[in-house]
Length: 262
Image (cartoon, rainbow, N blue to C red; front, side, top):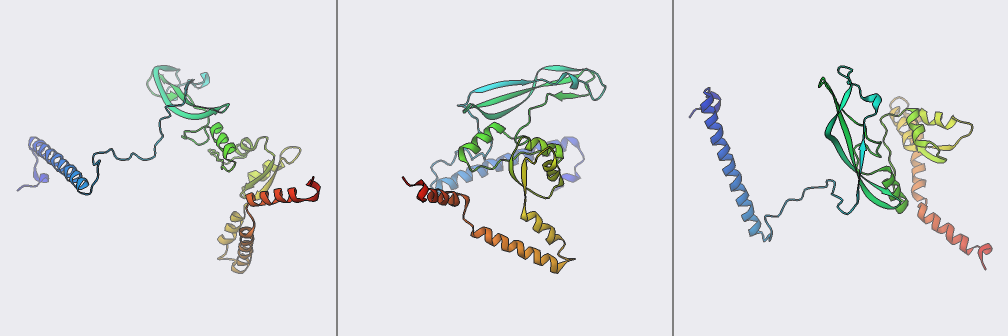
């Protein structure tokens, strides 16, 4: 019997391909039949049920939908290929959804970003979308803030394309208080900027430790001393009460103090 790679006649190869396709389909059908038989023998009452489809975005049927139309700014309507003017592609959009909250009313915003193209057919440009909490994510910044306020124990992340001082300034604009940071120099610059210090930098000990671990090969004695001290600091931290427990103890102490007695 000749192998397939020895056949050079196109018509013969086509017939072989059709036979192989039919045989594959027969084997697939046979496999499905045997799987159903195994399910029945195992006592599965619904062997033909749909497989679970994983954890994709679920349709929010109960939320009202507000449609927002995004247009390309006039100054961006220039073809990058020929420098001609981009014309709107009628009926063409790039669509996405974002769940947000407005005055404690949740709704889904359906964003329709218009598309533009040049008559030279050298480029298609889509209107920009507003910044999101996570690029490509489904939930707005307002939604994340609502969850954080409701749970009182949420972690808030904001992703930027770079770590410039300007990006840090945009993130911390108007903020007053403590921030936990690594050794990135931009944070020091932001703290020194302006007539007064608006926030206090709390540097992360994990980042400090990592620097001494990196030079341990060259300075083994000095590095070990610092790493051991940081380990002792971690041991003390593990013995400290949690913030919830500490708040509860302070409330009890305030209620039991003579000044609060009636």
